[in-house]
Image 1: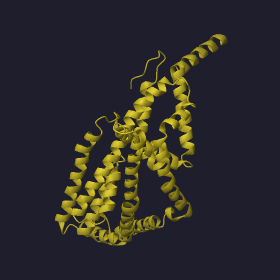
Image 2 (image 1 turned 120 degrees about the horizontal axis):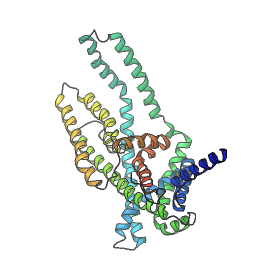
Image 3 (image 1 turned 45 degrees about the vertical axis):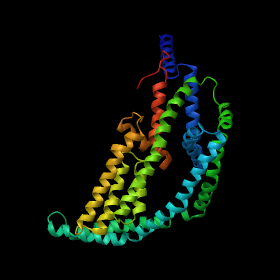
Length: 364
């Protein structure tokens, strides 16, 4: 009986292994995924400039391929790289200083905003004394004020002013653009060197990569275009409406699309809060103009930009997207949030291409 039981357990374990790793290609794919995940997770903090350069080179590769149709590879690389440096210089020397200045101004005016909001909130217990007392309102406002002041001080004197932060900034500003150029220029050489470390039986891995590459390229490049368009349109609209901190709010509008479903909700509060504190409801026309303009820009993004830029969008359920944002954001912070959908696409592509015990792919 004992021998029979051991034999049955052995057969069960064998079937389980065949179901999980049905052939050598699946083993190769599992090894690549495991080693890649461990290396990225363990080295991300040390080699962040390298990973950033790889991401930027990957994004620029699409432009290089299009330009390469008319000129040689090296000429295409130089043209695209010059465009990249131009945009990088604009962000570094124009956009960042303006956003930083407006951020400091906004933080310095937080006490004034708090007093204005407190005056409006204090009217509530006068109208509805049965719901909340004036003393309770003052206690809550004092607590909020202390928290906001603490956050504002941390924002102004943040870690970027530390020596380590400055060293990291210098590394990013000089090493990352240089590495981007060499990654584009020597792509074939680097890929050939990298492939020697991969398993020989990697047909399944290549199939997964082709699917992931197609979807990630469309998504990430489209997302960058969406961020730029939404930032530009928002700035023009806010500037035309004479809204304070127009550049800062426009940057927040552009970055809000990085986090699907959540970003647009988060950016609504600062935009409407600045408009309300600038004009109030007494001059309600200006506030309503901002509200309507903001709604139109968001609708333009959802109705026009998203279908146009993401015609081949990944087919993921909203719950899967939210779980991916929470999981990968918890692992890798901002970049984890930004690449949450592409990484979820990787998982989905692996599950779709993974062969079952009969050697067939599993449809999910």
